[in-house]
Length: 36
Image (spheres, rainbow, N blue to C red):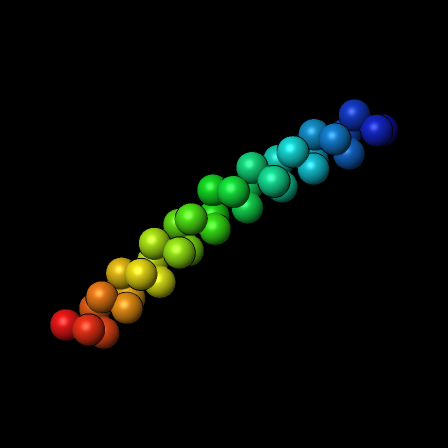
């Protein structure tokens, strides 16, 4: 049971680690589009 919790925690951290930079890139591209 504790093993499952550790795996899910690592998966969530990995997921947010991947998604947050993508979201930041998209917002930067959106700002560039607004400037042009």
